[in-house]
Image 1: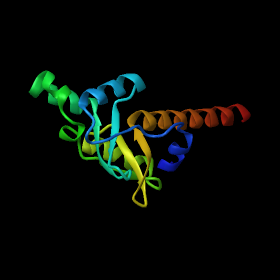
Image 2: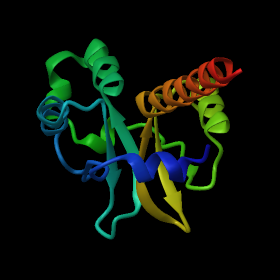
Image 3: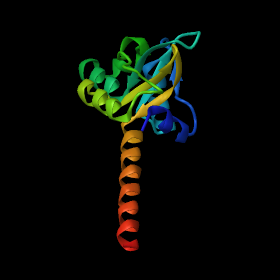
Image 4: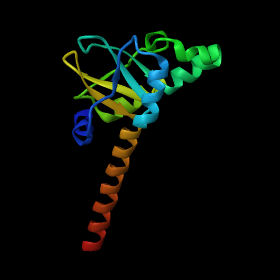
Length: 142
């Protein structure tokens, strides 16, 4: 299965924030939208990075409440990306080896969305269930 197939199943678009927004704003977005990562984009929509709950927690462990006053660009991480034509297995490998749970999807330099580890696991469960159902139907018919 390809990333494009997962993206076609998802509703909504990736949540973005500007690099000058406060970390406090990002935290409110995490809570309000029930998400764990926000893409950081420049004024023309270019992907600059990603800010995750993990980024916030790690910074708070070092700087305490002062983290809330920082700008997102001061704590964001590098955004590792994937493309619409990438195989889900390679995406899983990239997430595992880079220790990330979210990959922005880009195509031709344009941001297309975000794939999370939850999306990948859901896809794997659906594929496994389809295989089980197919085998069960085969056994029943013979």
